[in-house]
Length: 447
Ligand code: NAD
Image (tube, rainbow, N blue to C red; front, side, top):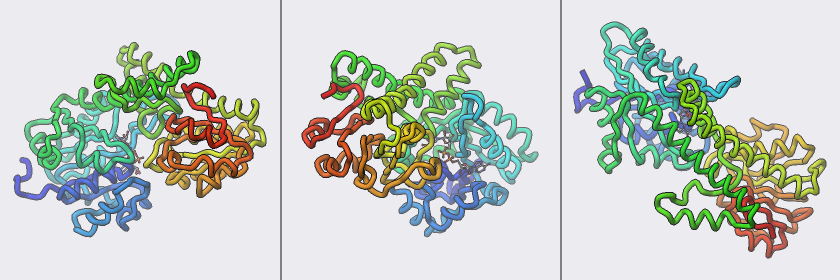
């Protein structure tokens, strides 16, 4: 039986990374009793001490506030956490396998199995991680095998659409809530969990398991396609002497198209879009849906080609070779408002130039530490000024506001040669040129 409507729901969240930590804090903020569980002791220790182990605007304040209420705690003890919970969210990672495009489902399987084995009462297990279509059905069988006799455990899928940098608002006020494979009982429980956002008018889509799994990866595939579309058009703009930034603004006025995700540039990266489209490619192939995988293959190739394009522009700015040249890199995170450098195009380009013999100095307002861990051989600066000091070429690779507001006239004299590559299409070319910079943008008319 579902817990009586007046009994407080006890929620566990397995995996306290970017998604799980945010979800746990948001659930506590909505008034529930929440235990966050992770296998990584250092993450649990940090969160329990009120420290978010990554940069996510607003999350630190909400974490401290909810820890103080006593409604929120973090542990590595999955057995005790699960035994007390009514609703268990699976928020662990699903990275790309090292040797193929497929998703690595070991963590999802381990977490689901741990939940099933430690259940002591009826519960709803809610998958939130992004998984290939068909995963949830297999996890259902796993739960049926491993849950103790007499306990009713229902596995459903409730994909997550939050954006890093806006994760708190996206969790508390999502665009939609997708509930896949829910019985009437599980649906009622999840409608209690999400009563806050539902009360604000958030639409709820109830569907079967495979549809729920596919909604998530299709959303990411669409966004990735939109970015690669404008990057392909940027190539046409360059060849034809047109300006893709003006073109994108004009396109964006069409409400059927919309202006978001139409910035030509270095392309997408991060812990989600690249691995999600590759996993979908792989899965679509397995299912014989070759058109989808062919489309996404192009999207991926266009995207990765943008990194090559920016490297080529840097080489061209240095007369064909960056050997022993100083390269100032502004931006390391895969996008602004995060310190996430997983599959970051910015760091890829920085590392590639380093490999070609350049002395690369990187500055990012938040991602310096995470970048240093991944690429310890690059140099890191603590300001834009320091990064461009003596530079033969400067690259803006992440569109942080700080870089959009920088005074080009103040920066120019610090460089050895004021040459700028705007790989995100967000800088005012005229202002930079007026300040003496040789300015190169993607898909824009050369000066
Ligand atoms: P992450 O790597 O930041 O976090 C995953 C966490 O799971 C880690 O802290 C890891 O230690 C923990 N973990 C692994 N195995 C575990 C286990 N058996 N029990 C408990 N904890 C375990 O990853 P993330 O970015 O938070 O992504 C998690 C999932 O959410 C992925 O499937 C991702 O595609 C999806 N997602 C992410 C975002 C995002 O913006 N980051 C948005 C929507 C969906």
